Amino acid sequence: MSVMILDAGNSIIKAKIQRKDQGEITFPHAFRQITDSEYTNILARASTAANIQDYLRINDIPYVIGESAERHGVITQRSGAARYTRDYYGILAASALGRLYERGGEINVFGSHPPGDVKFREDLMKSVIGDWHVEIGDSERHFRVTYANTFDEPVGGLMNVLLTEDGQHYQHSDLNGGRSLVIDIGGFTTDWLAVNPGGEVDYSLARIVPIGIQNVLVDFEESFRANHLEAVKDSPVLPPERLRKAIFNSVYEGGGRKYPCEDEVKEATNLLLIDIFCRPSAFS
Image (tube, one colour):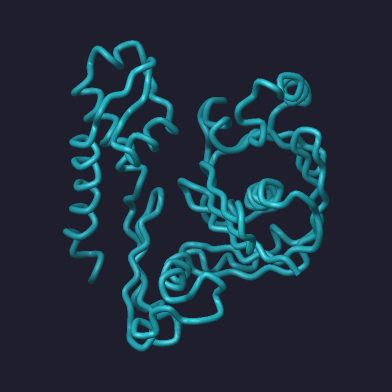
């Protein structure tokens, strides 16, 4: 039975399966339903579409997902119980399946959630279980999710450090022997979670701070604009994917030029770290 691990964060969707090559993917948390005519026109230009995998038909409904979706206008993200539905979380899961597998089959899905959403874990599981027919370009595959389970996002981060690649053995058993404080910096929130020896979660010490990577994007864009007025004066909106790449590479690419921006990146990331670690409420 194949297994997919899904971390549908507020900023980036991450999914992984056990495969030696291309077993892990990431794409922006953005999608919207499009019309049949839009979908057909995209397929007609498939030879020139760089992100054809962003255009899928899931259970006969066409969607644009990921970077391409960000170019289709403002994206409204759901939160809380509204997120864990078949037409939202289920679509994100099905799109990840379509990107990761070349053929369909029966799948087990393990999905992460913020600690505060543990009360919605049943809804998360119900949203992915069932049949999914995914079309990408000329390729079609049918998936049947027969089993689903959940885990807390900070615990997933801790296990990624503790366990080996196959998930069967410990690579840092010393950490597993004591209590751990896991800090999970997400897109819009930062989660603090205490974990007892053996991986047991202590929910009495769970905290959520309403800041995250999106704050870095906003602060970086503000600083970059202030320092490069001529370069961005005709660009009311800087593409999110370029901002993310600039923060990762310390180089912003636009208008056929490359702009070193290491100082702006350091400033934006330092502001986030100061905001996180200087909040007394995070530990209270």
